[in-house]
Amino acid sequence: MVLVIDTSSGRSALALVGQDGTLAQDVIAARREHHLPARTRALADPGLLTAVAVSLGPGSFTGLRVGVSYGVGLAMGLGVPLLGLGSLDLQAARACEPATALVEAGRGRLYWQEPGGEPGLGEPAELPAGLPAVGWLEEATAAAVRAAGRRLLGDRELAGFAEAAAALLGRAPELGYDTVKLKYMQSFRTVQE
Amino acid sequence: MGTTTSRELVTGSPEETEAAAEGLAHHVRRGDLLLLGGEMGAGKTTFVRGLARGMGVSGDVMSPTFQLVRVYAGEVPLAHVDLYRLSTADEIADLGLDELLDQGAVVVEWGDRIRDAGAVRVAIEVVGEHRRRLRIEEAPSRWCW
Image (tube, rainbow over all chains, first blue to last red; front, side, top):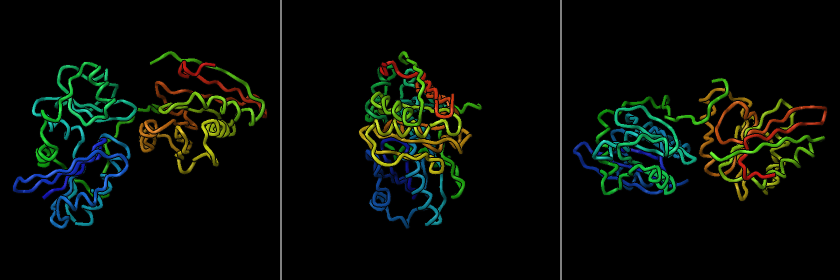
């Protein structure tokens, strides 16, 4: 059974995906405290995990470091494979229809990705039009997305986090414990560039 | 993006530079980014010291040349960043500036190494042994003076 960790947004998400298709999830609002060890133990006996999958971003600077550090440590300690997922892919997989995936980028900006497209970074008004959007957004950011004329899919229109994670695990690449690289898109340009 | 305003002033001593920065502090809000430029010894840290004092920070202000980021607690938290030892975009990405700006204001020494629309640029030019010309550019127009 695989533990999936996504701390790329203001929600701290854990899922458990069993070989037999059983699913469990624990998604809470989180700022500084994620309580990942206790929440993991509440989901499963960690000794039974066969792999750990971590969301590599893009997303929250501190959140990603909390979740990925925990995931790497757990996988190393158990000696099980570490798998990498994309935060935008996870959001897109929650939608039952083609949708633009969104993740908070800070300062009211968004990471976004259309189906089959490359990730982008910009203001809500710069989002591609057409498809509905899916993401775990702060209240103010969600309001800005709606004000820009984009429809945000609601939780009732979406699959659960565990279902989304389960759909992606088969394609998740295995990572080296010591070569994990977070996906982060710089919004600052260096002058030399 | 709102309209911006600029200002230039000349100070005759480090104390005057610190006082000038202290006088700007009441304009600074969460999410504001100040990029400081100026050669070694121009007074960038002196400027930050005045800014921090004006923002109600008690305690020492030192250039975080090796820690890279120091965060001073205050009504608006002030993150003090030094890019002196950094140059590549990857290294700068590892500072998490976006997140620091969500939490408070950010002032960056050697900030002329990065570009950001919406940042206030402060250039400190050495015009004499103790005299400095401060050019404050692209400040939000609410920084009325």
